[in-house]
Image 1 (tube, rainbow, N blue to C red):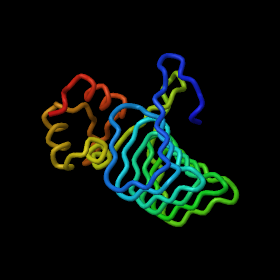
Image 2 (cartoon, rainbow, N blue to C red):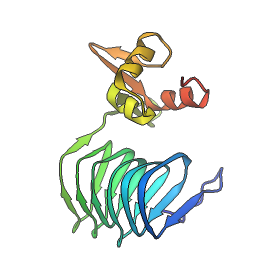
Image 3 (cartoon, rainbow, N blue to C red):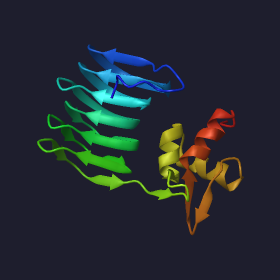
Length: 178
């Protein structure tokens, strides 16, 4: 996973083999590999690999997450969560795709995020109001206010809002976040 080349950009790789504690937030895409111990909260974009000998006690949010070591905490991925045969995950997961290889251990609840397919066959990921609030690290009522006022692109379905992740990312990239 970490050795793949991206056709358009050189990948940023961060390999952590140490004991860390605290909150780590990566706003730019980075391929992160944790081989030591980590405790706290972790938010990343790009690929995250929890190495076979890693011990992580954290809530994790990322795009593509592969776990080969021990994780205690809730894990949310915008694309995929993969547990290798050596993985031990004790916590809840949220992801549109969850792959659990033979030999891995998972104790918790899983929630499969909704996604839809365009006519082109590519997948569009849709987020709930609470998922957008978590993604933007703001309160849910603020996301609701932005959506109601047309500041944040979203669509109401009955009483609930849904947001296309790509449009939220474009909104952030255009500096519209307040």
